[in-house]
Amino acid sequence: MKMAALGDEPPFSAGVLNRVDEMIVFHALREEHLMQIVEIQLERAGPAGEPAHQAEDDHAARRNLVRTGFDPHYGARPLKRAVQKKVETPLGRLILKGEVRGAATCGGRGCGG
Image (cartoon, helix red, strand yellow):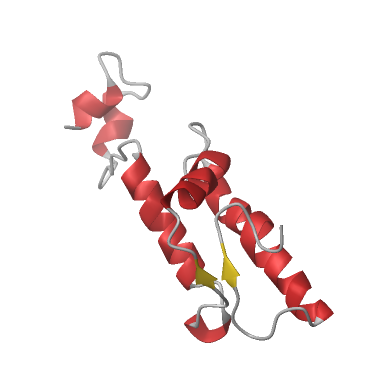
């Protein structure tokens, strides 16, 4: 597995590789993994783990978040920022304006339009 991950010509000498205790190989994320990450991010959006909103049961909206927040180079790192930008920030603004009290319903395309 170690040689398969490094390819035919390892970037490090054998002496350096022998000092490595463990190697972890990360496989590319698929859409179903990213959808699970979106679910987790939406569940953790509220204080103390309470959901700040109820996400609509809209598969297309969640897929939109996945497509917006996924970058093949960075993986799922930008996904959290996409959830913040499209859901959490607009929802927070609506709550501060007094247009929404406590929980709200938001889709993956955002809250409040």
